[in-house]
Amino acid sequence: MSERVLVVDDDDDMRDLCAVVLRGEGYEIVSAESGRSAEAVLRSSAVDVAVADLMMPEMGGLEVLRAAKEADPETVVILITAFPTVNTAVEAMKFGAAEYLVKPFSPSQLLEAVRASLESRRTREAHGLLRSRLRRTFSLSGLIGQGRATLKLFEDIRRTAAVDASLLILGESGTGKELVARAIHDNGLRHGRPFVAVNCAAIPENLLEAELFGYERGAFTGAGGPKQGLLEVANGGTLLLDEICEMGVMIQAKLLRALEEGAVRRLGARTPLPFDVRFIAATNRAMAEELDRQRFREDLFFRIAVIEVTVPPLRERREDIPLLAAHFLESCAAHYGKHVDGITAAAMDLITRYDWPGNVRELKNALERAVAYARGTFVAPEDLPATVLVGAERQPRANFHTWKEKTLERLEREFLESTLEVHGGNVTRAAQALGIHRSTLQRLMRRLHLPAA
Image 1: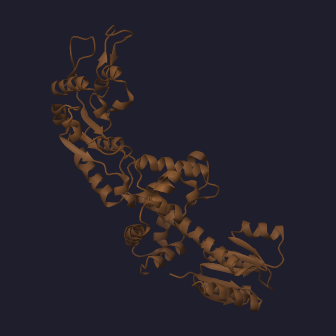
Image 2 (image 1 turned 120 degrees about the vertical axis):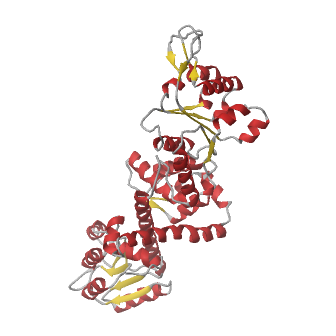
């Protein structure tokens, strides 16, 4: 879709020159010799950009600017003048002018002003659409996405939550295994009861046993007990043991016995205490290798792996990256008190091409850094960590763009189609539901070749 540019100038030579330069770059041109003529065009047809002379008889550039913004708040307006003053420049920017060019300017300056302004608007509109999708996307306990791999994970969570069996969650570090465990708990039979999570890798082995099973006073040096173990604390609810492969074999044996008996014996105690928990384990290790090397007990594995759920790495659900990016940009911007209008197309290309070995956790950290570093209202490539820039460039660009066209634009099209269908094809109501201007929705429909009702 070629953008439509309205060129307004009472100087025939300047108007024709601007038209020739812009038409040569593929823009569709509409010319107007006065502000009144421009106002009539703006009222009767859609315009993407208005290039208007500031000083014209009867109706000058500032009035054209106001008329353009009344017709469509997202119209790009570039004012040109041979008589620049600080006051007019300030007023132009206050009313929403994208650029303020001083005559004489070169063709490249005009083209760059139009290109950069349109790119900024496309970025804002894309971010706005992502935020609309984010509000309407189904999520589970903080898990966000609508790609095929994520929807399959959601279905696994729903089916697993309906039963009360022990569960093993597999997935690389940073994929959100704890969020999956919490989603299963929140949507299961034990919702509203305790959800206790412990990272086995974060607790020294000599303390992990006391944390899990609890202890009585004097059970060991410094034991001031009695103290409940986590198996008791989670009674009636769910216990998640994250990174369970970091647990020593001796503790594994004691855990197995406790699970089989449904009772826990505190360190230093003689009588066991009954407990009732749904047991969930998670690991980023390859369980087959752990079992082969006898680092993990086979009998405990079969006790906990009644059900297995695998959380896909981020590189296998790239279509969720723009949605996750919108979520993290919004939360990080609020945290730092910064205004962020979105992420540039170049930066979005980079984050969707990068493989994210640290998965969602790494993406969140990268965007938090980008928001903190951003000089303007858009996150740009230079705001991203060097590892992302280098890693993304290793991916074949041609393959990525083919994937992006087939996947991301398909998701955008499906989202807009479903919204329009819900509102009976009424563009005004659909735009209100999306939280965008009617003209913005019409522009998105033209870009995605969606028929108008």
